[in-house]
Amino acid sequence: MKFFQQTGRYLIFMWQVLSRPQKRRVFYQQLLTEFYAIGVDSFGIVVIISIFMGAVVSILVAYNIDSPLIPMKMVGYSTREMAILEFSPTMISLILAGKVGSSIASQIGTMRVTEQIDALEIMGINSANFLIFPKLVTAILINPALIVFSMVVSIFGGYLIATFTNLFTPAEYILGLRSWFDAFTVFYALIKTVVFAIIIVSISAFQGYIIKGGSIQVGRASTKAVVYASILIIVFNLILTQTILI
Image (cartoon, rainbow, N blue to C red; front, side, top):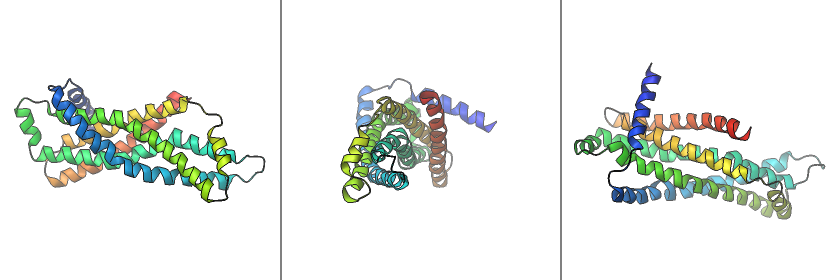
């Protein structure tokens, strides 16, 4: 029963979030602020994770190629496909669920327990739309850019391995990158990214928005936001892969 109750509250919450902003000028100002908080501030961790992820994947693929019948260009091909299809859209989204999701849940939860949200509602402002809609729009716009950037950096990480080790040559790696490329895989990854962005922001904001109590509840809401968003990302990853690719 509790599951259906929470689902109903979430749907009502999203209906409020997705309503038209009351003041567009204020909305655009908030949008610029959220672009930095959600997008620009996440580039550092995306770069670090992606470059090492691409490097490790290329090493593992090269290590497991033990047949002379398999060309070493498969390292570049495999690294590209893994980065585009799964590692960048899914793993980076899970990282953002922890970084961005916990931040949003804590921010909204703190505003709830300090009665700032109640003050907005007393003034006749749709607090859900005012606080969360800019975050949602920002995530939908900036997360695909982060994921594409992650793909490029991951592939570059594999190239560094080719340059500084003897496992395979840069020419073989680049040849693999250029082999059997299907642009639809990038489109598929971006579809997943948009869905994951909606999950991260909406679930995190909802957990912070509905809490009651004090600072302890804010911490619990932040933890729940990360856990629930991560689980839904994994579930929808399977659903989208089954629906789009197969």
